[in-house]
Each structure stands twice: as C-alpha cells, then as structure tokens.
Length: 375
Image (cartoon, rainbow, N blue to C red; front, side, top):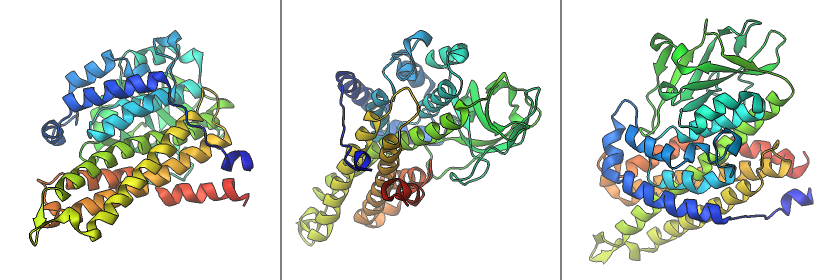
C-alpha cells in the first residue's frame, strides 16, 4: 500500500523534451484555428497530407520496437505529442493507431510483426472494443468461431473508416477473450454506420463484423492482461490530450479577460473571474503531473498496480479539469460563448468527449477505491 501511495516518480527524458518541441511547432503550424474549423465538416475530419507528414516524422512507431520499424521509445515518449495535438485540437487517427498497436503487441507479440510493421509504417489502425456504451462491461460480445469467422457488432469504433487494421475484442466458443485482427477493407461500407459525435474533430462508427473472417485470432493467457492494459493506456492518452486542450482553453480565457471591458474595467480584474481561472490553471498542472507520472510507470510488460493507480488518477483529474475549463470558458464569454463562432464551443465539446472516453471520472474513482483503501 505504501509503495502505491508513496510513488512520486516522474521521468522526463531528453527524447520527450525533443518531441515536445517538435510537436508544439508542428501542431502550431499545421493546426491553426482556421484549419481546425475547416476540417470539422469534412468526411475524414483530418488532413491526409498532414497525416503523411506525421507518419514521416515517425510518430506512428514511437512506441513500437525497432525490430518492426519503430523508435523503441515506449508510451512515455508519446505523451508530449498527444498533449500538443490536444492543444491544437488536431484530429488524426494517431491515438487510435497507437492503442491498436499496443493491444496487438501485448496480446500477440513478435508473431504479429507484419501487422506492427504496417502500423509503424503509417497504416492507420483501431480497436473495436465497445459492445454498447458501457466502458465497465465485459465487451466481448462479438463471437469468433473455430474458423475465425466473426459474428456481432461493435459500437463507437474510433477512426474506423481510415483503419487498415482493426483489432476486434471478442470471445471464442469457450467464452475466453480473444482479439481478432480484421483487415479494414473486409468490412463493407454497408456494415458501417458513422456516429454524429459531440466533438466534431473526432470520428467513430458502429461496425457489423458478422460474416467477416479474421486474418488471425490472438488468444491465450496474455489477452486478458493486454485488454486491461489497452484500457488503462487509452485512459492515459485521453488524459494527455485533455491536458493539451485545457491549456488552449485556458489561454483563450486569459486572453479574453485581458481584453474585454465591463463597467469601464477589464473583466480580468474581477475576483469572481480570477479565482475560477486560477482553479483551472492549478487543475491543469495537477493533471499534467499525474499524466507524466503515469507515463513513467508504464513499460513494455503488463502494467503494475502502481501504473493502474496512476493512469486512473490522471484520467479522473484531467476529465474533471477540462470539463470545468470548458464550462467556465463559455460562461466567461457571455452570450458570445454560446455561439458557434466562439472557440469555447469547441472546448466544451472536447470536454464532453474526453469525459466519457475510456470511462468518466466516477468510473475510475470507483476502481481506485479498492486499490488505495484495500476495500
């Protein structure tokens, strides 16, 4: 117990520092506000040329070993990249692709070298996990028969339309959890139904896999652990993205407080606005510390209890903070804050999406309690 509560490790490597500098400049250049708004109504939700530039930078393989064309830097090195993308509200399939690679690598291993090489080389991938809307459910409703043929649907599959590979979480005839690797091209357009998401920078679909034959099926003792780790790493990356978005939201608030006048005074001079702004800043820095702490606890093996605690704490805090920041941004901007033209609308939408993705704050606190209190 003391080891968990007393863990304060935060490593910030030279590689993370370099990636942070590169990612900040890249996102600033490629994802200004005008570009974000232009892509909101597009089918893909992101720029293909920018995605290719991102692939050329090697970001799709940062977490993967050098044997499959990756950089071998692990998940920790991705945190500054994802945080920077969150700050620019940049919509790409990067997070979905990274999480698919982690699930495949952890559930299968070196035998999936060809798939991991595809992903490292820039082929988008995703994980089909949810059976419905409950992140706390078993979500193994898709069945896989002895011939590798699937039956059933998956809900809210992120970036499904762009995925070359789809890792489908399901179960075999014995009821054991498996991960079926499906080629994206094997899922017909008729079997895909896109969702209208509150965050318009994101894309997701319901996919019907009935009758689709998997390219291969990953089974065995490692699968359950890999699924657990996928959920925790997914929560962490969502938290990192939320921290970046909170930072941009806070910058917009501060800029408005320093320029808008009411009753002959800058509204930033009013304590009723100062205090919540400081609360956002403190919450953001707290969330960032928790995110980098959690990334320091993750390695190539199954996640430890300390890593699980850290990931859940980061997601709970980051979810609450961005939700508060988005709400205050709308309120502080007054009537304008409720309009489509105000960027506050983008941040409060991102907050609603971040809160639910990989479980909300209550979901994670409920699971933290027995870990921290020996309940």
